[in-house]
Amino acid sequence: MKILLSNDDSVFAKGIAVMHGALQASHDVTVIAPDRNCSGASNALSLHQPLRIQQMDSGFYAVNGTPSDCVHLGLNCFLEEDPELVVSGINHGANLGDDVIYSGTVAAATEGRYMGLPAIAVSLCSHEGKHFETAARVVTDIITKLQSHPLAANQILNVNVPDIPYSELAGVKITRQGRRHRAEGMVKAKDPFGREIYWYGPAGAEQDAGPGTDFHAVANGFCSVTPLSVDMTARDSIEDMEKWLAM
Image (cartoon, rainbow, N blue to C red; front, side, top):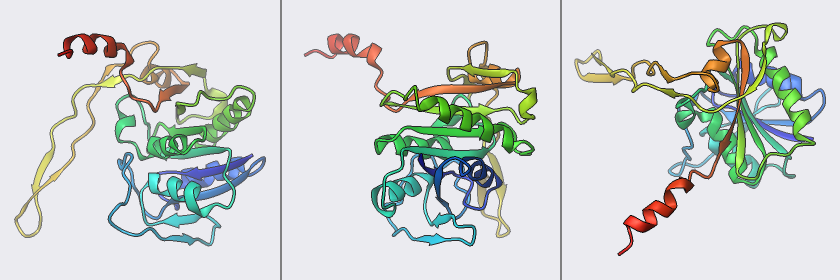
């Protein structure tokens, strides 16, 4: 299978190298990833600067753009043949609950689906990054299953894996997104010239994190697999809104 592999942690990140190593044993893999860390980039596109792509000594391709840029450029122009799957990751840190709104990892997978391809986003739920091999093995298993059970045309998979040895995984659970409390306040400081600056504070604590959620699965040693719809229409609201907006 031909696979386009990207991420948001940069072409130099350990996670993407481990994922590439696991996939290339059975697949034809091309890596196109940002030339710098783009965590939190979400679905941003670089509309006000030209994109450049450069092959690194590793054979990976680096782009001076966002994760979405990398996938869009790869599929729409750079690759001679379309791949059959887009994989994004392995991300350094979880993408659970509300995180998916901001995640460049999830955005790269979403861009692949917008371009007509099935896609998987995968994250290791720890910034220490001890067991990327666990996440890589989970994804290779999922890819094997997808070949006989294709994803729906409007969905991607968001995979979050505990940072533990594969042998210690409790299993795999299909989950829904949980939800965090409102994010904590921003941190106000001053730069060396006395000017005010602001840093984002920590993410909000888990609020909706009970059984069935991605938070709960990972906290209990399971790999969380959440199908995400790229069509964000709130279909349950359409009929009611048609009534109260009627003129």
